Image 1: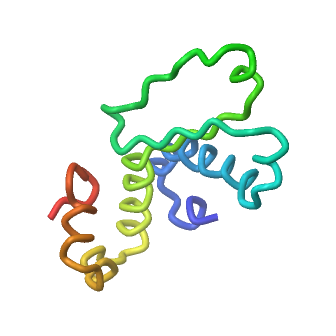
Image 2: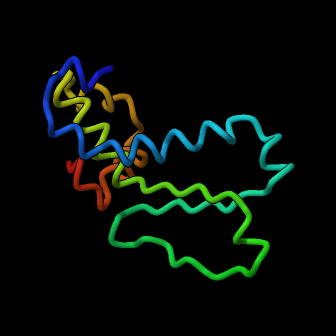
Length: 111
C-alpha cells in the first residue's frame, strides 16, 4: 500500500475518505442501482455539505453514496506531495477554463 511505502502517519487521516471512495465500487456497474436504488450526494467543499432530507421509509433502506470533492483533492494533493509529483506538470494540459474551475475554492490546489 502507498501509505505503508511512505511510512507517514499523516496519511492515516485519509482512511475515511478512501473508505468512502471504496463504497462507489458497489455502483461501478449500474445493476445494483437498478435493483436497490441509490441516494447520491456530491459536495464541492466540506463547508457546503449537502443538507440531508428525511425521505421517508423508502429512503432509509436505500443505499447512500456520499462524496466530498475537497476531501478527495486533499488526498490527491497528499499523494502528489509524498510521491514527489509536481501538480502543475500533471494539470498543465488542462484548458484555461478547466484549470480555473479546478482552482476555484480549492484549498489543495490553489493557483
